[in-house]
Length: 269
Image 1 (cartoon, helix red, strand yellow):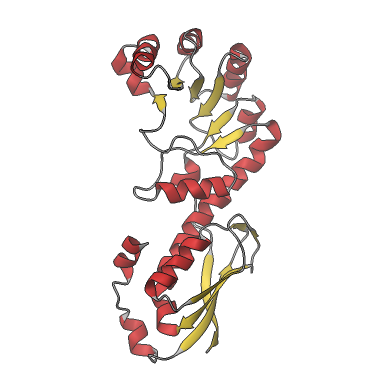
Image 2 (cartoon, one colour; image 1 turned 90 degrees about the horizontal axis):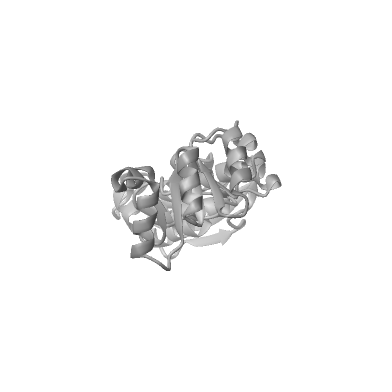
């Protein structure tokens, strides 16, 4: 939030200082212009407080609230110059995080009747991963690994450089014998090698829904099955009907459109 304000504010708002009296006060509301899921209220409030800690923030709705067109998410009151100085940064956070939560909720709504969990990925904007993964969780997803440091996920490039699935799994198990291991597989042959070596979770990369169904049936209870690659809202039901344990979706963080929110002054004083 400090870095975001440094991009936009830096303690000076030439427009506000030119137009508004120093002692002028105002009340404003953040209003949704479309349906969605709210996320980032506390972050927006902190932006206002960092600009001016005398600004009063009323939390009208909590993160996770379902918004309709016209829903009032929060209300702020205080020096008018401060309200307008914080407006863009605060609403930017709200729009971006609410957009992620809203798109995630759409994926979860389709997948959950089949008992399939939606996972987020590491496809996040640099510097915003914690917030974006929080937004995905607010929308109903489960968080996958936070980074390279907290879980072993052997990807296709690891496999190719190691010389194959078996070699990659053997090396990972030797280095981290107590860690759960997940491995990405691209073919039925790689899937068989991974399961035969007792891996805990397999990630089916760019499998068709029909191939996922066959893989899930073959794997049975021997490993968890995750699906990734090419999953959209349009084909999600077909993948979920195949009954993998998880479907990971990069687009909920890297391609979520901002939710249309706006701050409007409703009173002076």
